[in-house]
Image (cartoon, rainbow, N blue to C red):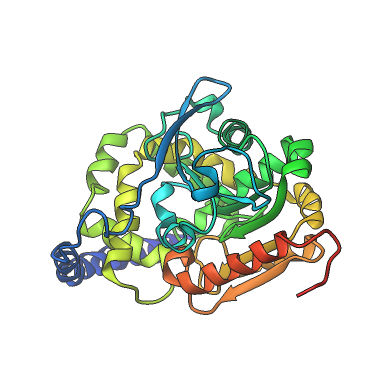
Length: 359
């Protein structure tokens, strides 16, 4: 790159830093306001809890699992024909991201939530097993232990959607036998350009090499990075607000995302980050054609673009695309009612006999 180009990038970086400092002052009031909301633990976002279980993966990692039962399951593990709804969260989040879906479906269905390895209250993985394929194997273990029989509807957000695809690819017999519906939210089967998270000003030819190196360099001093990302910091709040949401949302939504991000050590972020540029699960989508599949995407998603969702839908015959105008990556919070309605439709379709077009 010519000297003028590098100077332009440097100037842009200084400008961005100045903007961030200014924004820090602006969001301070929002942070304080949110913290004075005074909601009880039972009512606050992310405060819902269920029957806690532990599932151990093939490599010995303990996964934290929570189950919300309904009356028919209180005395027997057998299913009455209704599918269990299994939610799989995304990168740097935890099962608490499903707060509004959990609140909406609680009591209507048997619900299963779990923290992916190295996230939330699950144990930390070694680097060797911090892969999307391993996450697919982990999902298989959760189903074996917590949902050993009966139909299942899988719903994955972001990296959770990739987990569902990896499960379908690596465990096709289990997928075909058990899964009757799939919800893919703010996710992709491939084609991510993660360096755009660092700067959209850097050309792909350069940033494709720079991005992974920056992450690797930062990973050498994770404590320093985590001190900047600490829970409640203005920088963390601002980043959550800008990258997770497409429009203005209640400060409590941003606080929830900020809390989950801050609780995920940078070392964990660096572990999984290399997976995204090399991800290619498009061949796995062929198996989704046999079940109702709903793809949900925000039109202003800065992380997994709407175009990536459209590409997946084009590969899955019969898939339904639900576009959420103005929403960002955390559409499950930002447009919870639209997402819940789409999942309701998915469950209805999943409950119909194969080949039925009945309303």
